[in-house]
Structure formats: structure tokens, C-alpha cells
Length: 162
Image (cartoon, rainbow, N blue to C red; front, side):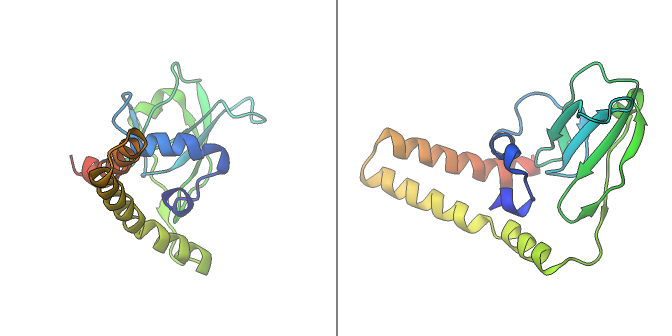
């Protein structure tokens, strides 16, 4: 539900789920809004992206070093609008990419927002059923399912408050 609610492209779903489950892995130097998809192009080569990243639940992301001298940043985030901007690569560590909120949402975007806001319901059901099943009949697959459910619960609701 989180992947649909954040308009995650299909080719990003595995990376998105990994970042959602383990946002605290690998240091991140740059910041934007949570779950933003950032495509960076070298200013001279706009036909192929130089790097594409997704920000974690706190809005942090990392880029390969060294940054090119001039880069074009394309950012997409649910409920936010962004105009492609040209930046000096040296300014990126000092820049927080902050897209503006969209004032009026379409019916489809309102549905996506509701699904994103209600993602706690299937997550709570997953935690309860996995822990109940593990208490009744312990097994490794149920333990892994319970661990992943609790990990996503921690990453989405407790980690952002730390």
C-alpha cells in the first residue's frame, strides 16, 4: 500500500521496499521530502540519467561521488509539484530539495492519499497474524514473516521519531 500511495514506479518497488524496511543503513548526506524519486542528469547529457535515487522516510538520500559540475534535477513526490532545476554539483550538499504541495488533488490522488494514510491497517494485521501463528506453531517461515512485519512497523512509525 505504501508503494501505491507514494506512486512508486514498478522498477523502483524492490529498492523502495528495501529503503522502507532499512532506512538506517548507509549514511545519507542529502535531504528532500520523504519518499521522493529523484532523477539526476548531467547537464550536457540529458538523454540518459546519471543517477536515480529514492529518499527514505525521513527524506534523506545518498548520491555517488563525485558530483558532476552541472546537474539537472527531476524530482517526483506524491502531492508535490517540482520544476526541473539546474544546479551546480558543489551546491547539492548545501541544498534541501523541497517541492511545493499541490493545492487541489484529483479523485485518484485523494484515493492514493487515503491508501497511504491507512497503511497501518494491513501492517497491524500482518504483525498480529504472524505473532499469533508463531505462538501457536513456531516455524522459520513464520518467524521471518513476523520479523519483516515488525521491521516495517519500526521503520515506518518508530524510526522517524528517533
